[in-house]
Image 1: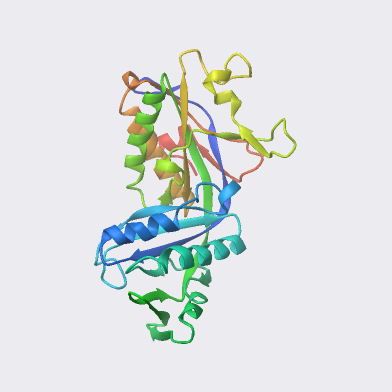
Image 2: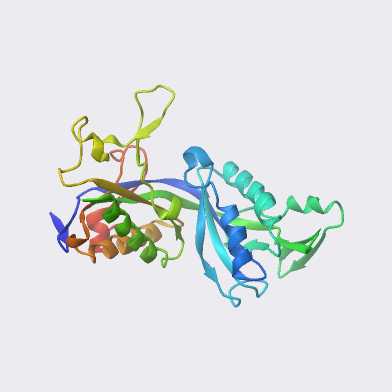
Amino acid sequence: MMLLNNIQIDDTFAEAFNMRGTRVIITAQNLKWAYHAANAMTGFATSVIGCGVEAGIERELSTKETPDGRPGVSILMFAMGSKVLMQQLETRMGQCILTCPTAAAFSGIDGEDKISLGKHLRYFGDGYQTSKLIDGKRYWRIPVMDGEFITEETTGMVRAIGGGNFLILATSQPAALAAAEVAIEAMKKVPNVIMPFPGGVVRSGSKVGSKYKTMFASTNDAFCPTLKGATNTELSPEIESVMEIVIDGLTFEDIALSMKVGIEAICNLGADSGVRRISAGNYGGKLGPHLFKLHDILNGSNS
């Protein structure tokens, strides 16, 4: 048994999947408007099950880190396939970045493949759009009512991983959520990852399959505290709430580091926080090729 500050770490693993990912840099007149654009673009993007993509804000960028010298943020977007990622990126660019006052968009990653960022969006200029090639990169200037919308023509698309996760088992809902918030704040400092669910936390963890034929996923009843007496529960009597943190990242190492940072932040709170166990969600290793073993991650030996 592994204990960290009297919090049990289950000898289990998170099971994750291959995805395709991209990074976009969004700038604006100030951070307020950069965040407006980024929040809109990453909205309704918690799970590929219903949203098509999983997306989130990675971090803030200083004026020295952006192509146009303005404040900005970087976002990461992940999908199960290239076609979906390309479609979602183009749609969200047109509806969320083009429309946002003072916003501009640039490639944030060099990838093995290139996908459209502003390549097709330029047609909104109705023939008045202009382009310029700078250091081998093409940029488009599209006339809009507040001046011009500037966007890079393409961004990179890379192979990525989605679905890293861990579960926080606590004696109350407030305790589970407080621990999750501490973990998220620590994990936000890790580059190349996002936690796509609201506030980075998901309460409705799922299992594969359902009693209803039209559902391919349903509530993870083994971790639902109200079902302890009605199902094959994974919860001991004192556990009254479970929260899950899901991580998408550009590499296996990025996700493993974020999980380590998040779990250690929770364990630093100690058992007096109400947290009793840390576990993870998996499907027996049969569906996803990437296995994040909790004990190995915390020992620094996961590979």
